Length: 133
Image 1 (cartoon, helix red, strand yellow):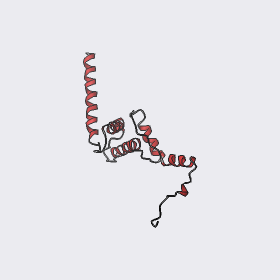
Image 2 (cartoon, helix red, strand yellow; image 1 turned 90 degrees about the vertical axis):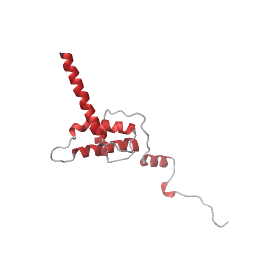
Image 3 (spheres, helix red, strand yellow; image 1 turned 60 degrees about the horizontal axis):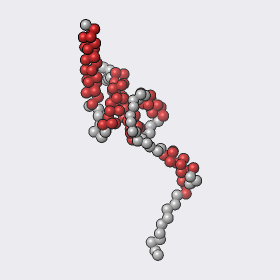
Image 4 (cartoon, one colour; image 1 turned 60 degrees about the vertical axis):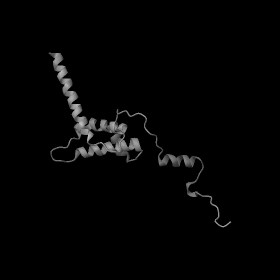
């Protein structure tokens, strides 16, 4: 009956995954694309057991949802956060693969490019024509 026990264990596992996925679905934002949601849901499901709300109602699930949004916003929208927070969410997301991510240029990268081109940001000028010819 080892085969029957294995089949029952697999069915129980599949059922648990289905329940966790159904539970996570309620946290999907209406503005998330399918790709963004799948990545964020993987982040949530990966850490759900560690962030379940304890009986004292201390809001651990809210913390997980916030961390998942920080990660998704950084990844898909280019938002920046303090280093400690980004390090935490990037470590939590280690191993989650997302294809075709957008590429962003930070302000500091733009300024570095601007300075290396010999332009001085303190001396911006606009050419304009006189209204009185």
